[in-house]
Amino acid sequence: VFVTINAIQSVNSYLSQQDVLAMFLAALAHDMDHTGQNNSFHIQALSRFALMYNDKSVLEQQSVAALFTILTHPGQNILMNFGREEFMTMRQLIMGAILDTDLSVHYNLLNRFVHHLEFKFDRRSVEDRKLMC
Image (cartoon, rainbow, N blue to C red; front, side, top):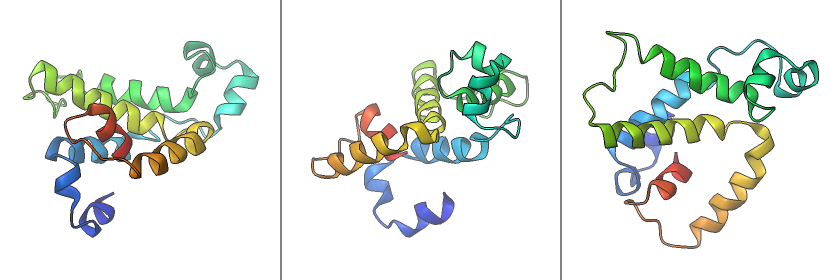
């Protein structure tokens, strides 16, 4: 992620510093608490993760839950100085970035991104920034 951000000279025109932080946190956490099996295995085995997350992006949802559980512990919430609205925006960006690592949504996401490149990017739009993250 760091190499990608540094390679793109115009990243500041697309992403805020909070967006970049969200990308770093998502990159660090995207495989957090994975069990060594894939989503299909969990769904077929009716694992506790599959049951908890209703067969939808099972491992990715567990990674999001694990990250935000850690961030609830005193002294571990690096986002604690964000206001409520900023925190919720960061949470949406991080969740989106991690959930989008599920390969079952990869091609849909790629098509949305390519289609989006044809139109103007709106830095104020959380949805646009989620797509970039």
